[in-house]
Amino acid sequence: MAPVRRLSLVTDEVHALRPERQAGALRVAIATQDMKNLNAHFGSARRFAVYDVGREEWNLVEAVAFDDVSDESGEHRTEGDDRIAPKVEALKGCHLLFCLAIGGPSAAKVVSAKIHPIKVPQPETIQEVLLRTQMMLRTCPPPWLRKVLAQAGGAEQKPSFEEED
Image (cartoon, rainbow, N blue to C red; front, side, top):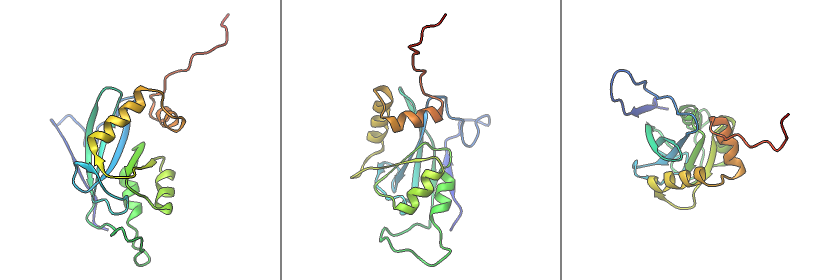
C-alpha cells in the first residue's frame, strides 16, 4: 500500500502536526471521497476527514488520504494485500468512525483499536454528521457513547446518592 498522506492545518511553528485533543471532545473520523460528504465505505474511502467535536464547536484536525483502496465489490485481492491495517493504524486515536458500510473483519480491527464504527444508511454532508454528533453530546448520550466519552475524558461525574458524613 502507498504511504499514508496526512494533511493538516498549521497556523504557525508552535502547533504540532496532530494537535492534542481537548478534554471532553471526541475525535471523529468520517469516510469521504470529496471532503464534503460522508459518502464512502470504509475499505474504499480515499480520505478520512478527522475532526475534534465538542458540545459547542468542532475543529478539523486533519485529512488522511489513501491512494490504494478497494473497489467496494467485496472481493478480496491476493494474500498479503492488506488495505485495512494501514487505515486502522492511521485512525488510531479516533473515538468514532462514520462510514456508509464496513465489513465484519474490518469492523473487528477498528473496534480492537478502540474506535467505535457507525454505519450511516445513506450519504450526507460532513456538517450534518458533526451537528448530529454535537446533539448527542448535548442531550442524553446513549450508553455506548457515554462509554466513549469516559475514554475521551469527557464524562461528567454522576451525582452520588450516598450521604456524606
